[in-house]
Image (cartoon, rainbow, N blue to C red; front, side, top):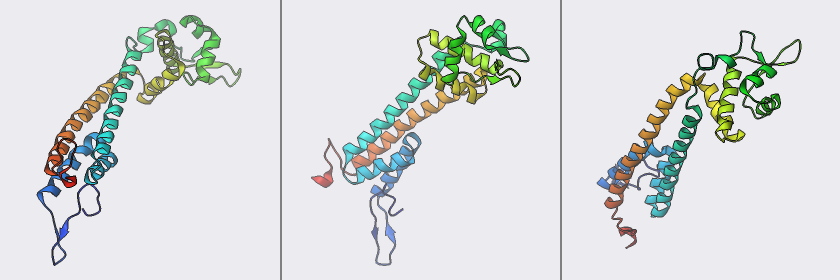
Length: 224
């Protein structure tokens, strides 16, 4: 693995064969342990910084990964708060469910207790995407549009801004509805937990590698 940057350079024998020491093995273990939690590029940068004696830079990169994980957890929590108490449109709110041909802006606004202008504002923000009737040009909201409008209404009542609501509704659309998204949230939780645990494993192997290099209390043995 010469030139990989995540292990130190190895010596060569008189016949050109490279020789690897326990230090190289420790570097490889540390790198492989860092990848699941931090990703290949960041793990490479961490090991490169350590091997160049820039341990503080390695710690900074690790801190950034932890901050990103924390941000991802907050995003997940925001999605869960937004979806709390919401269920399938027709089953939970038959009064706002769309008919087979959809519903128009006036009746939908009335059922939600908002003005038609509010629905038009939500449309401009990307929260709802009604189609247009080819004959009249009127907006027609199908079942998915009603679901999105209901979700937007709930989130606005909870104090969310339009720019905060848009990505949450995009998550619902991508998942194919509320129920698939709720199932996906469990997988999301699992992935975040796995990343957090992988970071712990990576930290343990990196600490072992630092000790192998003689790094103690902020000073590397290489630097005296």
